[in-house]
Amino acid sequence: MLNKSLHSPYLIRYLLLITLLAHSIPAAYVPLTVDEAHYALYGLKPALSYFDHPPLVGWLNALALMISDHELALRSFAIASYALSLWLVYRYTLTHYQSQITANIATLLFSAMPILHLLGIGLVPDTLLLPLTIALFWQAQNTLTKPSWQNWLLLGLLIGTAALSKYTSILFAVGLVLMLLVSKSTHLFKHLGLWMSVAIAGAMTLPILIWNSQHNWISILYQLNHGSPDTAFMWTHLLQSQASQLLAYTPFVWLGAWLLTTNFRQFISNIQHRQLVAFTLPALIIFTISSGKEPSLPHWLAFFYLLWLPSLSQRITQAYHASNRRLVNILFTTNFTYGWLITLVIIALSFSPRLGEAFHPNPAQDLIGWKTAAQIATKIRLENEPILTTHWVDSSRIAWYARPAPVIVLDDRIDQFDLWFGSPTNQTSGLLILPPHTNSSDWLARFESCQYLTATHEDFRFYRCLHFIVSP
Image 1 (cartoon, rainbow, N blue to C red):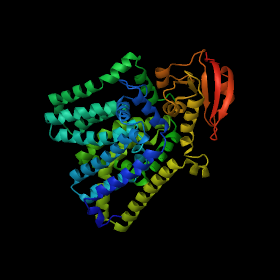
Image 2 (spheres, one colour):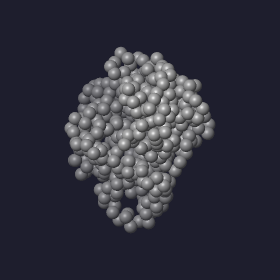
Image 3 (cartoon, rainbow, N blue to C red):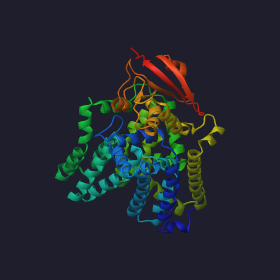
Image 4 (tube, rainbow, N blue to C red):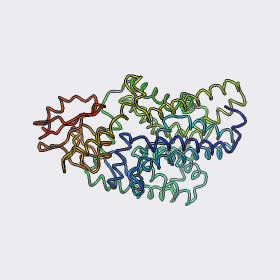
């Protein structure tokens, strides 16, 4: 694969077209996943912020809903975010290394990571952080090189936008401070432009602070507890998290990113390397420690692998020119083939989840039956009757596809659904939906009475239940 075609400045165009097509088709035909439906409900109910996340993902969905409530419309910002991220990685690499082949390698590595394709189809906060991360780091470097008022202004806007995307972006602010320190630019702490950036970013986070002040800081407290679960550190959890990242970001990128992060010789001799380590280190430490207490989701570290792509691509270019070209070519091609095969399998399973029944458990089981269950609930519920579910994970798709029916979550955990539709009480009655593999007897016993109504082929069961018994 590492041949003369990598010298072409048109490769980025082909990759953009291929990935846009690969994302748009499933985006148009596959029902929303649990997280996508949850954030679609954000857009349906615009607010200054939300229980789980800051408001940007909801605001973008609200914009999409002004045009259409079709799945493709709701996923349009995810598709655009992936394309913008791919282009930014290309432009950053080309600008910093002045090498067409290095820039093309970076884009090929980017396009081979299966998890990024998932983020490029479904709109979640981490999707928005993809382009924001590379843009923020690039702008920080530009500002350190040329601390003009314009650069400080743009930096503040990017920090504020990242804060509106996800709470963990506050760790990027810590990373920016570390960048100043390792760049020996502490004199910039006296620059008024820096404090203008801080003021701009702070002003942009006001919606989050206002919303939290109105809701007893419920979201901030949830994030603090969620980010540091009260469980013992276990190496098996850490290894499980790393294994999922290896599969999600491809072995080549996973190994390369970690080797570069721990390359102390480069840290000492190369200022750009120091800046990158400094920027990513706070979030990397927090997520790695947290993953030892509770296995982390692989997309949480997308920013880390994304930012190391340019440096990794430069090393590959150097190795290709200086070492065994055949070996480098084989490794790179194998990695690229692996990544795209996994991606195509994921896309195929999203279209036909039952293909996964050859495995146990079915990796695509969670894509089966939710839209149908919501449609049935719409038909059989009584007027003004709420729909009852056992957990917010079971509620999002039901609430989206059965909208505007109220959905009350019966578990003891406070979440966004409690804010939207209220918490269950001893007077709560309604249409109970139990998804597959849910123990019916446990939940039916928590009502004074329940009447079985019907079930789907996917084993979604429907009951009309009276007077929920709230746990003491």
